[in-house]
Image (cartoon, rainbow, N blue to C red; front, side, top):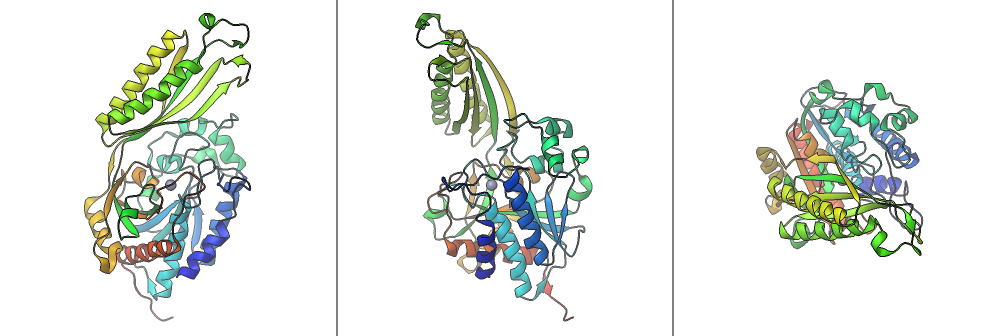
Length: 411
Ligand SMILES: [Zn+2]
């Protein structure tokens, strides 16, 4: 089993990896994305799976063809800029390896089984995370999704068409979703909770509510050498105060707030900028705490923008309510994944996932695989080889049980 995983992993690892940073740049519908989708299609077909692309560009590799009450597992292959190797791919590769492990055990699922790859999970190119599953479940309208643009102004519709898909057909897909009896996503843990335990695998209890907001500070471009301080409308100043306010608000509410993306125009050393566009990512253990953080940041940004004669416009780009995974399923999976060591630990997460979007529509669970440093969304993200293999074994046990796998009839 470990050889199967390792071979798959080695095939995928070089694709979309940046030569100097060592991080991954796999952006939806771009060249690296095309390569990883082709890699998946070939790897799934080599295992006798029937690969289909749904209306929204998600890939489904069926064991025995589509059917009702299906057991579905998978994750994503896109990345954040200079992301790590495991966030997403670990779930996809583990799923393929688990399918092969069931075969090795001589088992055949009695329920249909599918391995999925969901598009634009990170939202790195078009701004809205989990876009593939949001479209599938109808959590975003096709009109809004089609018009989303990347940094170059390319729309989702145009990018999808460029990859040979028909953007006219995107949108909620109740027929396909109706086939899913249960969804399980295996994912690298993006924190250090499991690192403090003896368990290589844990089970998710909930995903914190979270959202993304864009803040546009518009000032007046001018000469850095001749404009008196008193005469400036410098948008960097309220931006800087907003960054600090976000940190303070997160701290005060036991929450998380990050401004990790910023664009300064015109971005010249000797020019006062005309505009700063920044993105706030906020997450909290409760909806109330999240609202408190965002309200505090918004108030601080407005106050500071007014002080500096800068205009401020804010936009909600995405909003994800708290998700509690199916409790009965979670407890059952904790027992299956924990094996002889007893039930796997149950933990919440601040990270969004396709599983959290799908949880609104179907019984859903998540398995987390131990991350020794907790690092994620960075090239140094890591999972020990033994833990990768433990993840595959746990997923295979879970799939065997959920899909009612039984010894295959001799041909
Ligand atoms: Zn992920």
